Length: 386
Image (cartoon, rainbow, N blue to C red; front, side, top):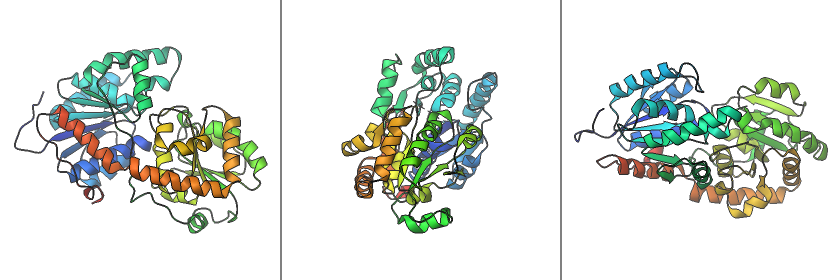
């Protein structure tokens, strides 16, 4: 396996599957920062809109044909990846999420420094025998990770309690404060939802339409909300495997916006942003919404409490899989505009001081410096946006 040379910048290979949602945003933000800092950045992922985005940034994008979940094609995918890694000659591999973490560690097997970032543990996403198999792999695969990067202390503790012995580093997710900022709701709402009355209370949920994100729980809660808050509307922003079933059960007061390239306008249009996830590491959508000055209601899964100031927790955290508690929290906030405004201001201040993506990128660079045998440059606080 390739050893680092001293006459060129460090070479980093990001490996990702999935290629959408929060994982794609994390990879994009890291690639942008690392390219600005002078690293040679390669990204291996399936062909998707992400490849276009990364190519435009200047990353060396390599096609890696892989399914989203482990299956009968895994052996072929690992072989393809091993050849790709030999050709790219990285000094360090950074594998994002369960599937890429599985294939990447099998391909490398510790022969070069490997960072594994689960972005929520795989065994939380499944049950029964599948969960046991996933947990067994994570325990065995930890020996091939030079560092396990968790996005919250809660995610790290979940791994430790599950018996995954690794060298952990916690690096909270970050958002781009120049991309996500407050703006008056009225003009944005009129553009996005021209038929919606200006006074209608608007709740927005941004996320892949899938079991993890819990939109089915939100729809079960929504009947109570709509009854108690006349005229309220709910917008589900995103697409995914559960789109059909969700549409089939949704009342007329629910709008499906589909997948969007930029969720910021939807956050700004909202009176309240909700993410009723079943599990997370630390979700990006609440951070983005708070950066836009909007209050949030989220389920208390890994990373949720760490993503907000303590003053928001009594109003904004609810148990997962509990439609009644979710409906109560949403209803109370929709009925109290002054409280929503206060929570929005508090959330924005917290995100700007604690979850700036520039700090995230700098901390990741520190991990890289610790794992490879020569300095890794750090971008300036301005260069990430260049």
